[in-house]
Length: 141
Length: 125
Image (cartoon, each protein chain N blue to C red):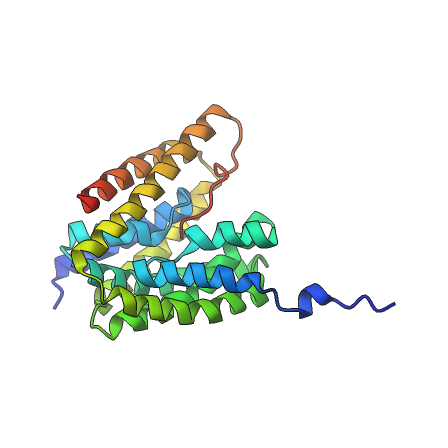
């Protein structure tokens, strides 16, 4: 059972991950999973499963806004979503067969790559100082 | 004579590549998968950048639901924490998107980048 403190920390993790994705163009999962591991003492698997649940809400809310702005290619999203969901389910089952320490290390590599990429992007956008294009980066949703 | 809208009616097999890559990353690592989906959509289908982002996020709804079920089958979902983080994320995302149009997030990006690098290193070792 979660303590009140855990829930409060969870709310803060969500806020920071949300601001990070909206403001800095970085994905929720890459922020939320390490935050749960370090701040809530979650084992790697539990952090990843819980991250996916949180992403259900954030992606749905974002898509409501994007639909209003007519930016979603619905046909493409449905096709990728349908096929990708099957693969995601199988991958999630596979991840649960992997040792937690190994999974944490692999995830760490993903976080590292995301961080380095983001650093390069922000340094690059510093040089071309006037360009307010979000550093030409892809959101790491 | 008949210039049928083949691009809209035909199925593009490259969508399978995009879906498999994004789904595999999302399910295995418990992330959205946009880090792969967005660049692959841009590479193969070349829509406007904002459409690639929005379409990726739409697909991620399905990926994250499927992945959540996959982890839940092993009891690896904390429902209270997940819903709470999700609610915080929705609010934080709205705030972040709102301010993105007003200030240059360069410094913040750099701070986040350094924090990520530190967290990544600590997870690897």
